[in-house]
Image 1 (cartoon, rainbow, N blue to C red):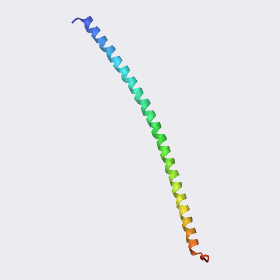
Image 2 (cartoon, rainbow, N blue to C red):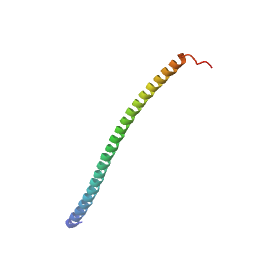
Image 3 (cartoon, one colour):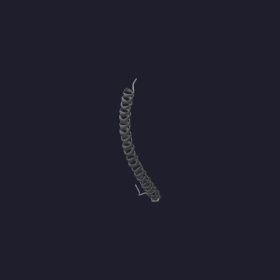
Image 4 (cartoon, rainbow, N blue to C red):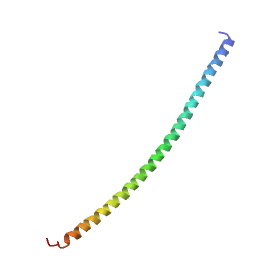
Amino acid sequence: MNYEQAIKDLQDNLVVIAEIERRQSAILREHAELLRYQAEVLEKHERYRAETEEYRRRTDLNLAEITDKLNGLIGYLDRQPRPPA
């Protein structure tokens, strides 16, 4: 093998390596975009989860309050004299 052929082979190899690096860079950019998107989705999900938990907490509190009031009303009515039949 002569020097010219060796140089040409090296140049061809460098072109191939450059193309591989270009493709890998593109893939890394796509992965970075996907990770950013996933982080945004996760953040939205966490906000939704927190809002849902707060709504559930308020609903449970309201239901407990209504239950206490109904139980009190039932107890009050039970203590009232019955009307004659």
